[in-house]
Image (cartoon, rainbow, N blue to C red; front, side):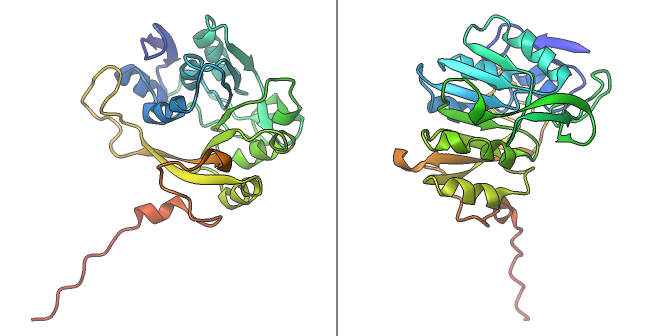
Length: 266
């Protein structure tokens, strides 16, 4: 079942009623992962090109389109792509690509879902051996304008997407923003991009934003958050963010419990 609401970037934005994370965030707050977007929009200007890889139903895409020159939005799942089309229908600077993204061109399978059945997150559709057949594209073989920012949300396949930018990286240094809590290949991504002179930073974004669009004070998400990494071109300087300390650094170090000191025997 589909609902719609007003958001920061759309007078009518469509979403799945049964999607607990994205759907509820849009319903109650009129936004999703807004603190993340606030950062990303700060680095954009009217001449920038954005690749939105794993666009889902298009909230990030509509935000990028509000500021960037051009947005290429990639979404393989047929249900999400249909919703993405609805949500970007009036945006002249958005081009949609119904395909998965990886390190080669071909085909793959993407997980699917029933929109009538409730689930935590309809965006958590993974590439693999089960699901529906979809095209698979390598970014640096596409005839598009070179990107300034590549946002990647592909449920653990971030490294394959980034490896598919190897030729592009010889001539351009886009900023990468990729999810870190699903991928098992953070070390490999770090080592791959490090050879091109990137600096790396942690990004922690809570699902609840107290300054949300609808000014709702009730927090339905508790302390849950999204964890991502910013790969920032070294020639642009440094960012005032928590740096990734090396290829084996892991976000778990920020969440280790500190045991209270034992009481001395009296």
